Image (cartoon, rainbow, N blue to C red; front, side, top):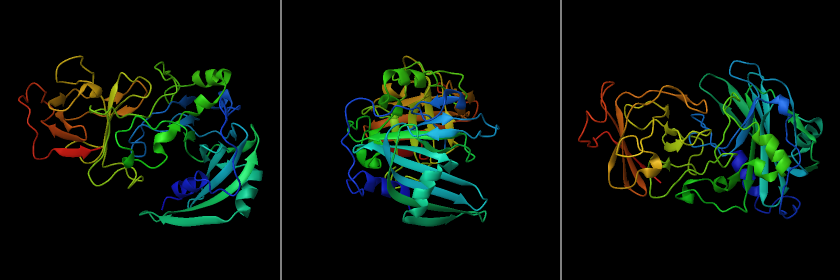
Length: 379
């Protein structure tokens, strides 16, 4: 049961308790939710964290701590004059709690802050008094989680306290949906939830001087590698129709029909810090290839290791030399035994086949033929 999605639909369909103002031209936000010294980096759109963000992430996040470090407790503030429309609480049987807050500055734009440890006292009072929808989930280890969501309508000012960090995660998600945007960059909108094609970077909704402050922190999760490519805020719009680049779905499932499990699928994309580095987000359906992120050195010509946007229907392409370690953006990579054969049968059908052992190369396996173990993906 997806409470977040169901209530987001209500809050953006004109059914909220009170009307919201029409969206004006120009900036909507005036306050960066966290102080510059309170976070390590602000991750651009498009990062990958399997198994959740199998396709490039549609939101950014404040990175608060490096792996293994405790999450500091810091204040998180609302970015502008907004109306809080949804509050979700999560209570684990272990005793940990967390909150997600959705808000709107105007009728066609929704934004959110996720992974708050606590919300402000005034917001907590609003939440406690509101009617809530709750459900409990149980897990194989005996643990449970209780989620409760309240649809509210509560105005706050720019800079008002939203809550605090420290729910055990290493970041605070800051996302934004703008229904005024052109939903381009997707081969078939029917594969995605209704709001997915309308995400944008919150940075774009600030005045230039605050955009510059954000851009100074746009970097890999450790803050060490800055994004120099345009758009500086990153991108999650990955499909290039007529080529292999983009998201591919295992038949019978997609992000709209099953948004909670992306592991059957495949994404042929790029590093979120340096788009020149190709990245394969591999699910569980390709025989002999473990779920994970893979990368290789792209070639400028031929049929070996070609960039995905240069792979068109009609030929088999081979990929070898998968690099272990980390990508430019510090994404964890894994090696692959053998090679990967990829064939774009037509604009909506991709066939993927892992072949050979650790000693195999693309050249040693010529002529390439797809085996009966090959996996078909669609979009």
